[in-house]
Length: 155
Image 1 (cartoon, helix red, strand yellow):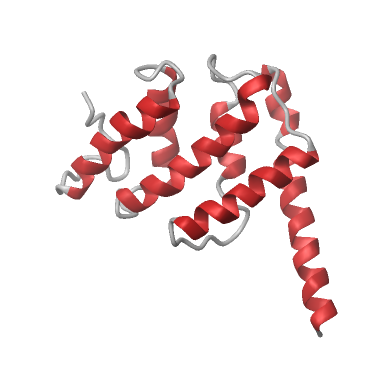
Image 2 (cartoon, rainbow, N blue to C red; image 1 turned 90 degrees about the horizontal axis):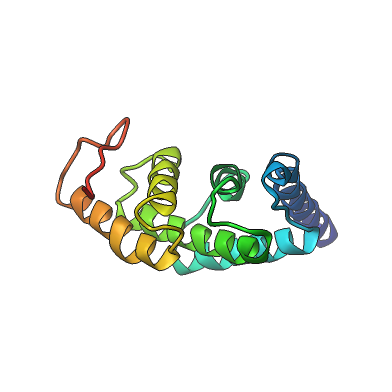
């Protein structure tokens, strides 16, 4: 029985790696891609981030959505791709909590991407500490205009 559990976990891990590396077919058009080692590192970081934020996640995780959303950013290059994805993943889980889960994953990613490429000019620190903090505060204070389609509350 223990061997079966181990093989199931191993198989699931390989599936997750393949799901992430399959995104390369799209992201390579923008000059960025991930190796299996990169994918494994990002999946390990995901596990740590989920634990730190006391979240659970079912299915494939948010990483493929982040890859598809951000790989075309003018501020992401192969040299910073893995580190940027890791930070975006951490920021995503943090602000899912900070926004009280009032946003869908897609709404949060869309907001992150819009501000990362525009106001933040590629600065992860500005995205996390200013744009998303203001947005989450507005949500916690009861602003409801974002539901279904966020309103640009930061401006």
